Length: 62
Image (cartoon, rainbow, N blue to C red; front, top):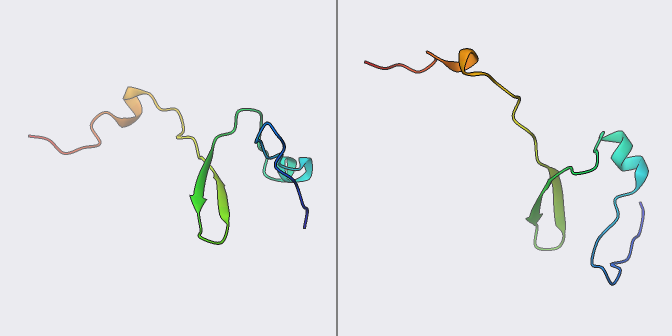
């Protein structure tokens, strides 16, 4: 367990060992969820890049 303080810039630093363990790079976006007695940070998952050819015709139509 690690303790951190909220500095005047109001930014929380995620420890390096956690960033490396989860492979979070600069610019990683997070979803913030209020849990009542705390806050949950979840990494926002990126959708894989697709091309039109990959998805064309996958929906039924008449």
